[in-house]
Length: 442
Image (cartoon, rainbow, N blue to C red; front, side, top):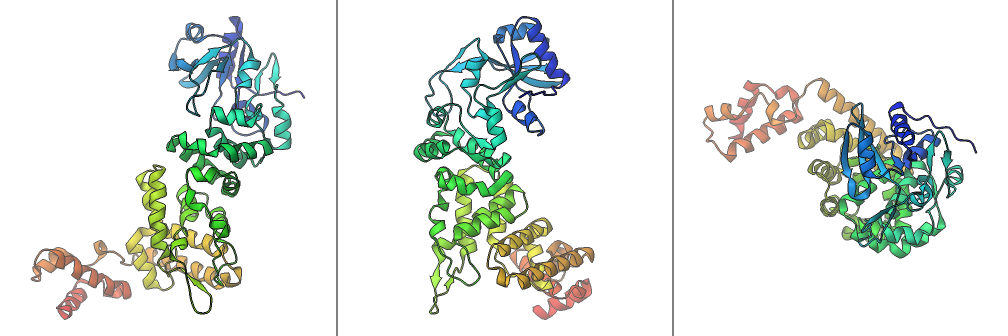
């Protein structure tokens, strides 16, 4: 199969410089894969028979980014390109990194150390495609398959199990059966991998195709970062509003929500508290009183365990806490605006859409119609600049002090009482009216 890849000018300059000085040089890995698939290429990586010290001599500006692994970054027109010497890896002692690397002179040996066949191809214009492990065939068949034995590759680097899942999600490829079996056997070695590395792969899976998490569950990979999902597929919700197991409901709602990380995380975690709050009434119907708050507690443990940033944690916990809240009247919309602000309220509406669509659709129409009305009320409130928070009240703490209120907590209490009145009737947001209301309160 004849392959022609259009290589950027700066990358070609690096290849030609190395080749003109007697060295082999190829683009390699993901840039080859994505070029063949007509996907955008983020990084153009180069592999060469030249040693790092030889590479350094050939280019004016380099950054020694990974000399211990044979990698230097060559700067061309303010862009950096990683150039790595052909190598093979030594023993992997921590399920992630080789204890040493050994330079080799063969591109075939270099490709044989890589993870998946679709990432183990190299190319230059002179030689064409170098594909010793049938990566092209696997691209055509839409298959993720390891170079050599999956068990060997995963024993070297446990993160490759998650990378297989991530590539499957990003490319919508199937996963080779051997990867399935090796993952089930070796999944516990993921506990040796840093949570930051796991989190980044997890994020990419969520954003690319969250449905693939079901495969991760079957592979037992989810046990290493969100073991709280264990057993959810057997958890029957026993309520007319639900026709799916808690696991299926969770995956469906995660799939249906807008493709934004904190929203995906919200749906994945929003109902975990049901496991601890289930009660059955006399009619045999299950109820989950307080499950949003319980879910938020569980979600906080998971998000902190995976070291998410504080902004993401705060957004997710807020949305989980309020995902089951009643929003219907204009007053309820204003109160929620006061609690969480416009941005998160719009996110909450998206969360509720996904939640409803992953429940019993017999009851969905009225609930979805209500959400449309809620969003309309929200837009009207904002367009009319109606008051829904203390800072927009026509009266403030200084005014209350001038009326004889002592500074302290009482001011906040009184302002919140006045705010409730204004939320009920925005026409009351007038200083004279509020003073009269205050006088009646005291």
